[in-house]
Length: 390
Ligand SMILES: Cc1ncc(COP(=O)(O)O)c(C=O)c1O
Image (spheres, rainbow, N blue to C red):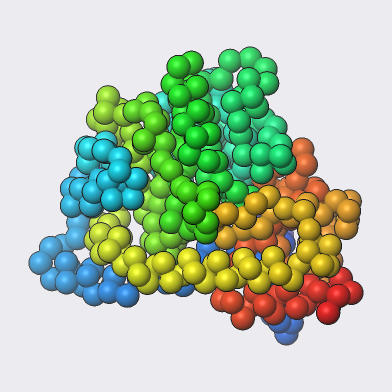
């Protein structure tokens, strides 16, 4: 659509469209023209909320208007999450330290606004979840991108932090990671959290993919176990299969409880109450949710069995989340052009690495295997045929 000229302009903060979104729009056009497209670029479960969530909300709605909750969230949900830290990690987290948010995205915004002033520097390991880079910059905080190595599955180490030029005020780590699906071991997470605490660097641990972990050799661990100064960000979008409900949470040090809750109140009053009621129910649906994790594991294995023989043989260890981050420089110089070719010639859409890493992203693509197993099997079949395999 031709844009209308106006004397009113967007703010200097601007917006940064993602390349993956642009490719998804291209794919949708092809689909409308009758092509059958498999969307493996999208990082969300293909399943809905667990059974019983809608009924739990309907029941709650009979006895309450489901109006605003307190800014930090429903006490029952905070207490249940606190108990879950004990059940899953043997970690003591007082319910008062938990703030319910608009997804992990909302939690990260509160963490950045609540902990850093303009001009302070927050380090983000490359590759990263692309939203964070722009959110940090939009808030006037400097985002310091730094290198990680394939040897460490593109996850950060203390040595990587020490190589950053100048002082940093914060660090964000995601394990399992997006786009990598790789994990930081409990020992390394402890080392990073302690290093940051000792140097006055605010450690922010994004644990949104916890629960979607495949091997006992690479267990998940929470930064709550290692540092009371750490901020932990989590969400109901992934393991709990409730991406559209826009609900997450954060754990903050006790001296930040009141200020972060006030910030939440000032910015948006509270997270949606029906979603909080639904989430309280979803926490106890582990059997159904673990069934999804089993499917992700099967999907991952379909990819690992089918893709290496047709050239996709270099990737970070896929121990969690639902991503395979493949190095494709030997197949094409430019991952955006490569994704376009794959879309046009195989009818499969993957995400080019450029959204996740300005330095090396053109050499990587990310497959998401969150869909149905038949879809992943068909995608591997089409890619193999395209690359001259089966
Ligand atoms: C690593 C990571 N953090 C945060 C988010 C944002 O998630 P939410 O839906 O909870 O806002 C995503 C979404 O894909 C993600 O991959």
